Amino acid sequence: MKRILSGVQPSGRAHLGNYLGAIRQHIEMAEKFEAYLFIADLHALTTTKDPQLMREQTYDLAVSYLALGLNPEHTVFFKQSDLSEHAELCWIFDCIVKMPFLERAHAWKDAQAKGKKETSVGLFNYPILQAADILLYQPDLVPVGQDQKQHIEMTRDIAITFNNTFGETFKIPEPHIKKEVAVVPGTDGQKMSKSYGNTIEIFADEKELKKQVMGIVTSSVPLEDPKDPKSCNVFQLYKLLGTDKEVKDLEDKYLKGGFGYGDAKKTLLAKILDHFSQAQEKYQELYPKKDYVYGVIEEGNKKAKIMASKTLEEVKKKVGYK
Ligand code: AMP
Ligand code: TRP
Image (tube, rainbow, N blue to C red; front, top):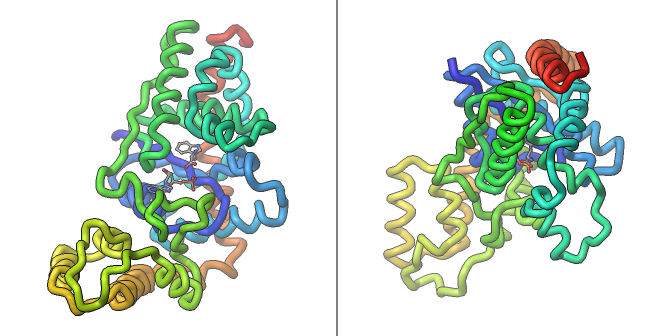
């Protein structure tokens, strides 16, 4: 059976981009493949420096995955910082990766371009830690959104370099990026991202959700006039959630005219509320069950440890530590 692996940072409440671009695939694929999914809290320290927030966001992400349907019987669901193997393998990779290779990373270049001269060493090293996360579990596929493509390519390069230097050790993984949801747009039309403040958070309460949806940027075409669905952010998001018939109906309304953006936003809001109603209920039910949620992670950690320590042992032999 093929194996998948992916991680999400606990850096804020899950949004539609995370869900459509990644989390939904993770949960669906876990039913068909052997699955390793984890909370990337080591990576989150590059941005979150508040310990209470780190705890809360980690817990929130765990509850979100479970509420959205992750089945712990079919998935090894674990927390990155609980497995020392990730940081250990990262160091070993640090010693084979050259500086100019990392300087090409988009995330690093963007941070530099924005004038953030004093970025942390951790941010610079971020792709190497991600390579360690992935390669420890020898997955075939890594399901992610488009923004992670370069990180998976770097992971492949690192695996090849290690294999060439120390002998065949790592399987070379493939990215798995679903085209229609590779880049989910945010409320301002740019990629939906916590760092742009343009997110629609799937577990926000109704009032907050309404504010986010009503805040979607639209053109100034007047209510009576026909509108172009393709260039409208509201329609683009609706398309990712509605059935074919629902999407066709909304498209007809746009083209006919007499249908304003306010109406379109209300249609989208109703769709989101309906789509996540069960998950929202499950979220409310699970949130207070701390023992259960932490228990799931404990179990996942134990299973992940078996695989991670096996790979690390092999690596230690290859480099001459054993
Ligand atoms: P992050 O919250 O940065 O850890 O991202 C978690 C996952 O969600 C990664 O696989 C990202 O590629 C994916 N993702 C985040 N934002 C978007 C977006 N706007 N469209 C598609 N996928 C996304
Ligand atoms: N960098 C990823 C993101 O921001 C999170 C991540 C960390 C990840 N390690 C990973 C994703 C390993 C896939 C595989 O979305």
